[in-house]
Image 1 (tube, rainbow, N blue to C red):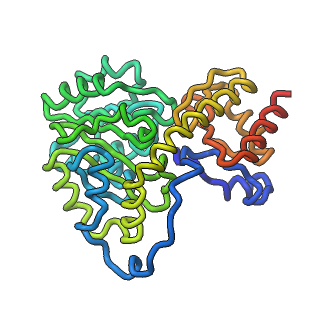
Image 2: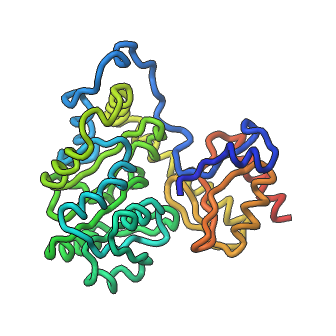
Length: 329
């Protein structure tokens, strides 16, 4: 559920890449403005005592962190680590959700069950690990810190884990579980890819108790993040003025996208700060109609739906509205 794929779409529909409006990802189209990077940054190996970890601890509110080559690295390695530490586990993965979670727990030999949000309470007693996304990609459902803490306590009491992917939470930090020292059984994943719009840096963080961090660090080894990426990430995490302005702007843009889709589509629209979700039986049809007009969105099959990212500039907003109007007519 990465989104993207504009090159493949251009080839399929015979429309040049530069002519597409790509709304298929949940990446902030007006991301943090990267300054000129000093040449010296490219000439140095990564150093663990640079500004990145301290900037991350200040921004996220916890120093119990491990820097990663994107949160994807943790998604791939946590199932392997769990098997080494505790053997084959019973794992509940939020569904619908980012498919990489489900895939990597299964490929590492765990017993995986896809769990809808409303069924988590019923399944919890039989699970060793629960993986949720908050807010969820793509359904936009949200979980309160109190609710998640109750689930963590239940899992931790029997040596289990609650894994919370907070990739889309930066615009609503009050929902985050990061509050200083990490308690037993809680693992939180964060990334600079979405809110900061810096997906290409491949910088993310895992927050967990010391034993989990140390075990994972041994697997990762040194220099997992390039020094230029560490340098840029540290600057972005310290730019509190940009972060506040961006949260305010995303509130306005979220409402605009939701209103636009509600005007021209007949199905209910749900949204987070960075994307909107339309669950519809006509997802395949609507996705093709949009693509024929060079608008790329992300289509899901189970459940059937479309995810719309934010347009970046005014001309793109008008472009999307014009295409939606044409499809409705």
